[in-house]
Length: 233
Image (tube, rainbow, N blue to C red; front, top):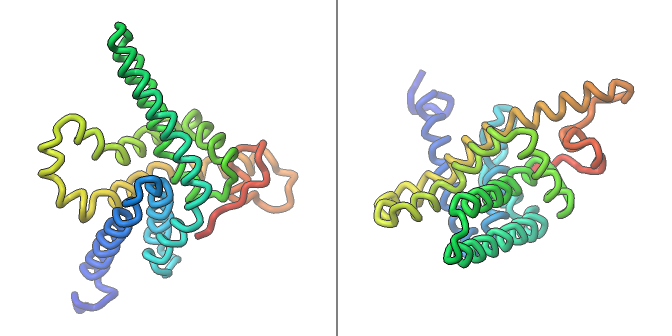
């Protein structure tokens, strides 16, 4: 087979890599207002879902902007609420340290809120939710699958962690952050979270054999919220 053919393995790898680079640029561009970071992450997860689905030949870039647009309201507000809580805890913790508060307690509190914040866009990219549903069900996702949630969150927060530990080293890695990191991190985070979502579907369907048809992914996530709708963007 001609290696320059679109169907050849090398060209498919290069095309996939190119999509990741363009998605990374789009993500950074949409993060510029700062408060849209959550919606931009939802867009990335939506695009990665399309990019990794062999049966979906639609544009990953178009999927990114669909996910960004659909999450602009719900995700931005939810992400903003949790970010505000994170900032308040950080400010209170900084003050409390002066009075002898334990650094470990403050650090754990910040880590838990940061974990929660990072999974809001991922959940929204798979399920259409109201703001209360999104905040509640993200919490249940973390409680049910702490390891996968933690791994996904670490990937999202790694640039911030590197910057806080060594700002000079962070700047040296600018080419990586700017070209490939965020889309690749989202790719792995999506992989970590894919099985938990699938498991939730299977558990729900197994517990509801009386239903005529299998429950969709949206309905499977947490039995007390049957009105959730799967986000197919």
